Length: 147
Image: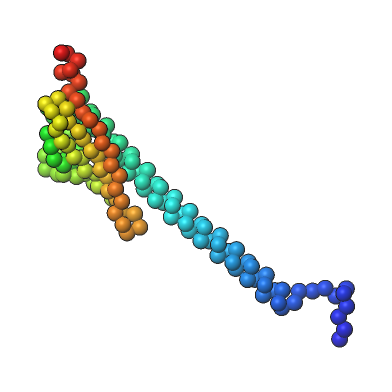
C-alpha cells in the first residue's frame, strides 16, 4: 500500500495531540468557571453583610433621633423592631440573627453628649467565619442645637 501526498488524513498521533490540547483547554476553562463562581458567591455574601451593617448603623441613628437617652451607654446589644415599627435596642439579646448573618451592635460612651456605635456582622463563608464592621459617632444633636 502506497501513500501519496493526495491521501491526507488524520493519524493516531495527531488525534492524541488534539484530544490532549482540548482536555487542557477544557480543564482551564472549568477551573476558571469554578473560581469565578466561588468569588461571585463570596462577593454576594459580603454585599449582604455590608447591607446589614449599614442597616444597623441607620437603626442606631434612628434610636438616637428618637431620644439620645435611648442609646445604651456601653456594651453589645441586639436590635429589634418594636410593635410600632420603630427600632429598639434589645434588653435580652446581644446579637440579632438574619438568614445566617449575626449582627452585634457595640456601644461606648465618649462623654455626656457623645457615644460611638459599631455594627459588626459575621457570617460563614466556605467554612470560615468572615466579619465586616462599620462604626459611627453619635451626638446628642438636639441638645447642642438648642444651646
